[in-house]
Every structure is written in C-alpha cells, then in structure tokens.
Image (tube, rainbow, N blue to C red):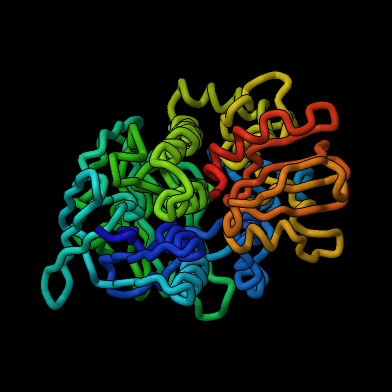
Length: 492
C-alpha cells in the first residue's frame, strides 16, 4: 500500500483537506463525480474563524481581493442577531461559495494535489494495511490503493454508505429548492409562511438573474427522488404550497434541490476511513454553519493524518479527530434543528416564538447564539478544569499572528507552513526547552509579551489551536506530555 490519502469530493472541504496534506508532504488524490466545477451559488457565508484559518495558511488575501462585504448580522430562525458589538472577533463575509471553491481548487492544484473530475468512487475495502477503492470514469473502471480514505462527498456520501458508518437521523425532513431565473413577476414577501419559508432575491446587477428560494419542513410534503431532475413545475408547486400564489417566471438558468433530515455519523472514523463535512454532520443550511464546520474538520484531520503517515505520531492520534470534532458537529446539528422547531407555525410554536422574541433582545442571549457554533474549545487534557488556562483548547489569538499594522509574525509563518510552534512570549526568558529532534514540524518562536493573552508561553498545534499554555506561576509544568502527545517523541 502507498502513503497516499484518497479524498472523495472536490467541494471546499475536500480541496482544503488535500492542500493541508500536501503542505505536510503527503500525496493526495481527490475523486469528484461531477465533471466540472460548481458555477452557481449554493451558499455564501464565511465565518470569522474560517477567515482566520485561511489567513494562517496565507490564502485569505485571494478571497479578500474581491472585497466581499462584511455582514454585521446573523439570522437565527428568522430572528436577526446583532454582530456589531463583536465585529472584531465575530463577523460574516458574504462570499458566493463557488469563489471559495475556485480559490481552494487553484491552491490545491498548485500544491500538487491530483484532482480527478468525472471520477466516481463506487466501492471500497480496507484492512490493517490500507484501503482499496474502486473508481468509475469515462474510460472505464480502475482501482486505487491508499493508506487512508476520507469521505468529503457531501449529503449523498458514497463513503458513508459503502463503509457502513453508523448514522442517526433526527428531526423533521426539510425540502428546499433554489431557482435562478431571468425574472419573477410581481412583489413577493420574503419570510415565514405556514407552509415553510420563501424568498425572491433580485439581482443587484442590471440584467442579472433573480433567485427563488423555497424551504418546506412539513412531514406530509414528499420531495421527488434525489436522482430525479428538478423541474420548473416543481418550483412552481413548492411556491404555491408555501405562499398560496402561483409565480410567473422567465427563463430558467439553474435549478437545485436539497432534501434531507438532520444526520450525524456516530463516529467520524472507521479504521482507515474518515468522514468530514456534510458526510459527517448534515443539517439544514442556515448561516453557513455546514461549510465552515466542515472546513475546520479538514484543518483538524489533515495535520494528524500527515503526522501518522510521516512517522511522527502513532495511530492513536487519529482517534482525537473524532473526539474533538464530533461534539462540534453535534452542536451545529442541534443549533440548526432547533431553528426548524422555531420556524414551524402553529399555536404551540407561536407561543414559543413570543418568548424567544424577548430572549433575543438580551445581549447575553444574542452573543450566545452568535458564538454557539463558531466558538470552539476542544476538551484537551485539563481544559475542563476550573483553573485551566482560558486559552487551552482554543484558537490562538489573532494578536499573536498579526502585528498592529497587519504584518505577519514568526508564528504566522510557522502556521503558514503547516507546522506547530512553541512560543516564548517573554522575549526569551521563559526557559522553554529546545525543539531539537522535532525540526520540520515544530518551530521555536520568540515574541514580545502580548497584552490580554495572559500567558508567558504557548504550544500551538498546526491547526492553530493552543495545546498548552503557561503563566509565570506554572512555568513549564505539563509541557513535555503535551509535546509527546501532539508532536511525538523527539528524534534521537
């Protein structure tokens, strides 16, 4: 077997994971059943934490070049949450998903990722040594051998089914349609209706398409089979059920259907097979939580696969992917499913919405709903203790990555290269051990003290999370176990 990782799915999550592997020197093959890249906007929200992640890899500037607007609000079950008081740390970038995909595909290709479009994974088998996948392409069927397989192939994940992952489905089914059309006659109220949600979004550009968006979550509404093409009649019928009106529409340019229940894999790892993104945690697409959670799945798994494949860590490190990311995926599923309950109309639910109308006015509730999905803290060793350092298990503060004038620090350069960092925040007097024997995957970085960080030293993992933090009182207590856990034994 080879040291290659095969990734099913060339969406943003699969492409970013492939780039992370190449950054660490691991070969990656991406199989994508669609013959061409996505040219239409399905979603378009990039969270601040994802922008931070892309900044740490030096790829966010490409997306910022298009000057995507900063959105100071976030919706929760049709309630608008105010981001203004937290815009330094919490914001949404309005960025059509196809632009993010284009950037990530170009980045992956330039990194040497083997991207195979029009290649569909149809079978897999695994043993203690590796994974063999069967692939169908235009010129016939072939097999690939790899060390690991990752399913980043979305809601209809072949990997999830073929590897027979244990999954749990909960909550109501949702049935949504997107239709980009030349025109829609009349005025339409966007918002909640007894039958679901509906909106017409007019193009800001003259001559540009309008978009009809429908979302139904009534159990008695059965969507067509997934393999049946979307039709104009289907869009009209859905609009009629929701609004009671029949739309008169112009030429159709693009149609898309999405219909599922909330679904969670009960383990994100099965031997040498992993799932990420929608394949691992599928929920209704509210506020970009699915895309952003999936990208952080990739960041978490990529460096760990690379560490094992390059001999720097044992197989047990890969178990921490499930341990850390499954609670995050579950929280996103609960967060979005609760919104479906609030959007359901009826006497009992209307009373609940009345209560919630008052609750969202409270600043504490507003902030909690804003950060429930985006503010992640991994339960690293000791992080749950009352006296644990507040940074332990959290993303590294931005002030340590960029200076006040926006320039990169030595820490940013280490993270850009996909390495971890042992950071001295005393200017050299923290008494940290040398990183000899871990060269190439752990840098020693010295920075000036940072106001507000409350630490004299930090150990940062390649995914930007703090794995150890010290104060003047604690010194280097606990550093060696953390180094061994996340960066392996030092080479002799």
